[in-house]
Length: 354
Image 1 (cartoon, one colour):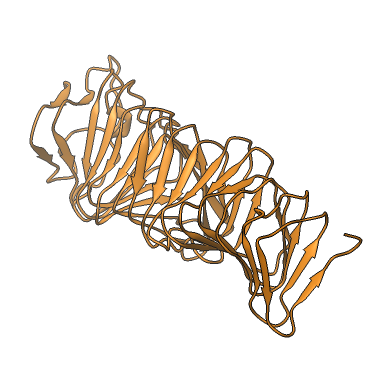
Image 2 (spheres, rainbow, N blue to C red):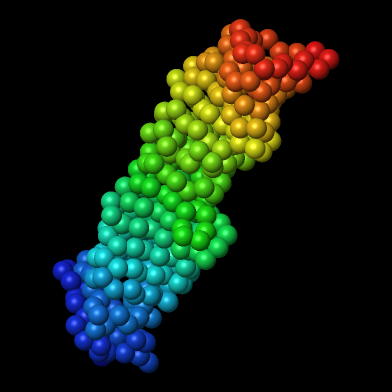
C-alpha cells in the first residue's frame, strides 16, 4: 500500500487490516505520517503500526487509544516532532524515543517503559496520567494531571531537566505506584513549582536551579529532600513539612515568611544557607545539624530529637530558639549567639566546651 498522511480529524481503525501490514515495505512507501490528524485504535484493531510511522521532521504524532491498551515498540524519532495522547486507555512507549517537541497527555495513561527525549516538555492535563516505569529524564513537567510509576518494585526516579529559560508548574498529584516508590529530581537552571498534594515517598533531589514548594503539601511529610549541588535552591511558598533535609555548601533554602519542618529518625546535615523571615522546626528523633551561615530571622523550634549548631553562625543572632517538648535537645558544636532561648521542663542544651 502507499503512504498514509493524517492531515486533520481522526482516522479510526475499525478492522484488523484497516491499514495493511505492520512493517515498512521494500521501498518504504507505506509510511504513516502525522500532520494534524489522529490515529484512533479500537477493540478490533490494537495493532502496533509504529514501525511505519514517519520519521520525517516535525511529525505531530497523535494517538487515541479509545479505551484500549496499545503498545508502540518502535521509537518515535522525528526531529522536532511531538506526541499527543488522546482518549481513555493506555498507550505504552517501550522504545528509546527521541522526538524533541512536547509530550501532551490529554486523557488516559501514557506509560513509558522505554524512554522519552531528555528535552521533551511533558504536559499532563487534568484526568491524564503519566506513568514512569523506569528511570527517565525529560525536559520539564507541568499540568494538573497525575504522575506515578507502574514498576514492580524498588524506586523509579523521574528527572525534570528544566532549562534556564523555563518556569514550569505541576499542580497535579505525583504518587507512588502500587509496588514501587516514585522519586523526583529537579535539574537544569530553570524553575519548577510543585503545588499539588503530592504523596510520593521517594527522595526529592534538587541538583540545579530552583524547586518551589507551594500549597503546603507539595512533598510528602516523610520524603527526604537533598540539595546535592552548589547553586541548587529550595523555595517555600507555603509552610511545608519534609522527612529530612540534606544540603551541601553553596545551596540555599528560601523560606520567605514560611516555616519549614524537617526531621525523622535519621541524622542529616544542611551546610547551605537558610534565609527569609520564616522559621525552622526540627521534629523526629534523629539529629539535624545546621552548619552554614544562616540568616533566617524566624523562630527555630526543636520539638523532638537534637538540633546541632555548627560553624558559629548556624542561627541568626536575632532568631528565637524554642525547645518546645520534653526530650528535645540543642547541641552546640561551636560558639553561637541567638536572639532568645526558651524551653520547657525536660529539654536540654548541650554546650560541650563552648
